[in-house]
Image 1: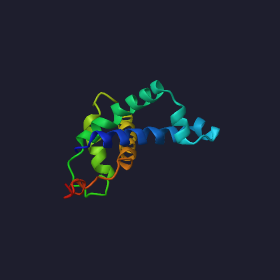
Image 2: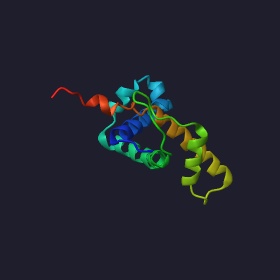
Image 3: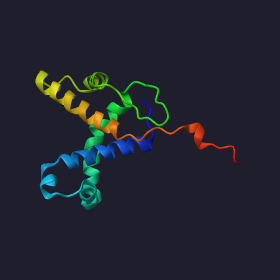
Image 4: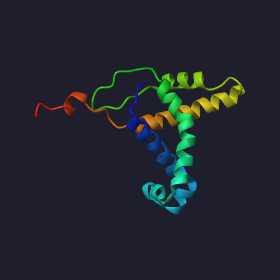
Length: 130
């Protein structure tokens, strides 16, 4: 699938914030996700985004091309994503560990896809007003 740099950045940032929101320590503190994200220094955000990028970006790039109507997000069912993930996960793991990794990465990719901003209509960006 062809994603723009903005779409990939938004997907990765949204996934990082979703993981931050699911952290038990953050929930116990009662801190808002946006506040917790802003309190992280640049290096902490980099480390989190780098680790997620290694897991999510290869899968997003390897997804098959699908037509996306303007105003909608690209979406794939779990089986398509799991097939792509299982193709990217190495065979050097045990059967159970590999299955767990495929399910976890599939869930991460679905979270990332949910954070991709809706596609814009490229024709609507150009107007006849010159």
